[in-house]
Amino acid sequence: MKLSHLKQITAYLQKFTKISAIYRVSDTIIKVAFDRDDELYFEMQRSNSKIFKCTSYARSKVYNAPFDVLLAKRFNRANILNIELFGGDKIIRFKTSVASAYKEETTYLQFEFTGKYTNVIILDEDETVLEALRHVDLFSSFREVRVGQKLLNVPQAPFEAKEYPLDDVEQFLYDEYAREEQEKLASLKKQKISLLNKKLKKLEKLIDSLDDENALEEEALKYQHYGNLLLANMHNIKPYQKVVELDDYDGKKVKIELHKEFSSVAMMANSLFSRSKKAKQRALHMHIEKSSLISKIEHMKLFIHTVEEAKDVAKIQLLFPKNVQAKKIKTNDSIETFWIEGYKVSLGKNEKGNVELLQNARAKDIWLHMKERPSAHVIITTDKQNVPDSVIKGAARLCVDFTIFQQDKYLVDYTPRREVTIQSGANVLYNKYKTIEIDTRG
Image (cartoon, rainbow, N blue to C red):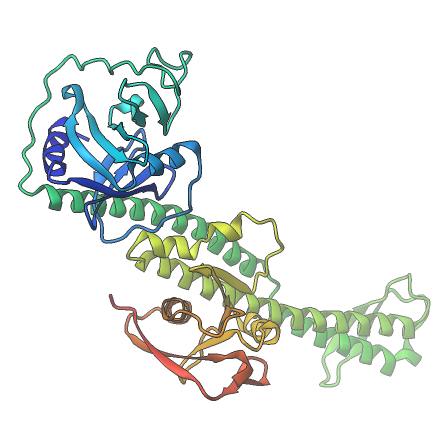
């Protein structure tokens, strides 16, 4: 951040009298709640440090490192004695006190936005390091940041910083978050769409490499016809003949090559019937495989469209869950898995996936499907009676996103799996359902 901006933010912070709560919400972001409910976030990433405000920021996990334990102990419900831009540099220092049963402890909390020295350091009254977000030894820098050691000051910058006045500090802090989110969203979209496009090209290459169904069916008919002709004319074929020319049923001449490995015409005919059968099976297999690939390609295009339409980073994180990718488990290529607020949400990519979801879901699991139209089937896995509305809404949105490209209002029905009766394949009847409206336009 610019020194000028930090000066103005420091002046803005000086209106607060108390730190109500403080904790890490991610590896490098610290949330500070001032007075009652005024919350600021300090992003202490070395290459991208900043302060921002937002309506809410999801806590990725609960941190229990020594730094986090001391941060809570020294600064939760702490009185602010002073806030200053320390040494005129990019360092915001809070001087605080907490009254305990024994004595009042004064502690410094130092946020350093100083490039390679970016850090959060907890100091005692004598400016000795009690803990830090990053410990730095003498091999890495002349400025050691180690528990029990006196903290040296950051060297002064050899130039005078320009002034960049802010019209509204609070709006600037909200804008910082919005800018960061848009940059992160754009970067994530680019990365994930590139990944999905590679998968799409692979599927399209596979479908292009498939044998032609019609050619296989013609081949099957041809070999069957040749076999029948041989059997019908076997009394006229000499054992030593390599090629025979026979009259077709419509009067045309047909040449058939006889292979020496077959000692009789009957064996040669059986070989042709066998080849005809294999060609038929391949044609049938091609039809099934082609149908499967077409549905996977359609699903991948919907996936790409859903990423393109994502309005925030949270949606991208939902579509690419880390807790699933990290586990080395066998994945089903007919089912897509997501996680919403800890609930496993499974979505059928095609009819095969829809059927498997229906067959494997438990009675209490929640089943979702678009109202009165073909759509992906979705299952929310749960052992609980009541699934939060936010989870149902998120699952319903996935049902719509992976069914249709057009942005509009849609209705999605949902009910426990026990209320769903399978008719045939993925066709079902259900009752005692509820309906939720999903608007994909916003």
